[in-house]
Image 1: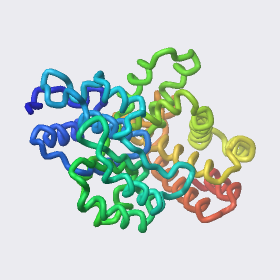
Image 2: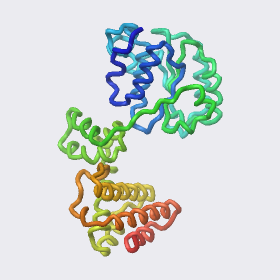
Image 3: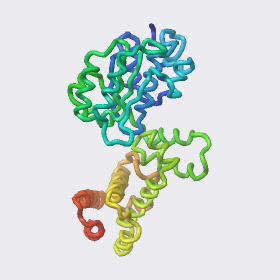
Image 4: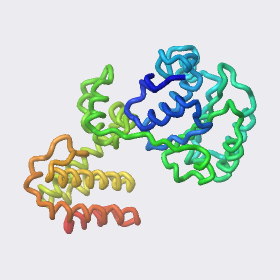
Amino acid sequence: MTVQTRKIFPSLLGNEKLKNTLSSDFASGKSAHAYILDGPSGSGKRTAALLIAQAVLCEHRDDASHPLPCGKCPVCRKIAGGISVDVMTVSNGDHATIGVEAIRQIRQTLYVAPNDGDKKIYIIENAHRMTVQAQNALLLSLEEPPPYVMFLLLTEDASALLETVRSRAPTIKTELFPSAFVTEFLAAQPNLTPAQRERIPASAHLCGGSLGSALNLLKSGDTELALYKTAEEFVDLLLNGKKTDALVFINTSLPKDREKTRTLLTLVRFALRDLLASKKDGELLFFTELPSYARRVSIRRLLELSEAVVRAENDIAANGAQVTVLTALVCGG
């Protein structure tokens, strides 16, 4: 099968390393019986897994005149619609972990022949949440699977998997995207409301390069985006306002929830990082445009405040009283 000139995963944005690796594997006819797809939430792991499943089972997989997968044959459509009996998904669902029982259920169906093609694929979502016992149970299947079985382990932290598991499946990382790319991606979404279009810049900056997270922020991220605006106001007061106003702000406008406060301080650090980067024309990751006071603030002041914010984060993580910690940040940061 000649795939060098074929379009491989044309619907998958970015992720050129992933595409190149799998193109080589498919071209040589030596695709692995298992892959670990490693990347942060929303970085496209599930999309990539479904495309791999389609490519393996696509009715046109041996026809170089079609992209791989073609996305149009009955098998590709079944997989995209989540109704293929040859593609099974295991996840922790509402549970904190994936236990050994879920793996036992996989093993019970392992030797049942595929239905629509010559392969069957098991997608294990949140594989990093498998217990040690579950991972050890999976090892037996990873070591000597039937020739028609492929495993796709989706994880946010491949290092959480046992070394014995990692050694039996190549790890491919999904990639994050620069904010400019995310902005274009969001702007191209259909049927956006005026309010959603106003949220595009903040969503693109807060998503951490994840297209999935960006879409969630755009469509239903009111709480997160409100926190972003609060962080922006807090930075303004810390660098450009009066201490008395900042003290009033921490008592009236900052979140009372400890985790939200830590998240807010992280956003404050991102804002300070932008102000430092702007001194050397670096890329902005927090601000959509620099505030008017940016040029007036010295590098020394930004560095001192950044260190103070880190101390505040650590103190709150260690159960320090929030108002006390934030007051110290305002008065001594």
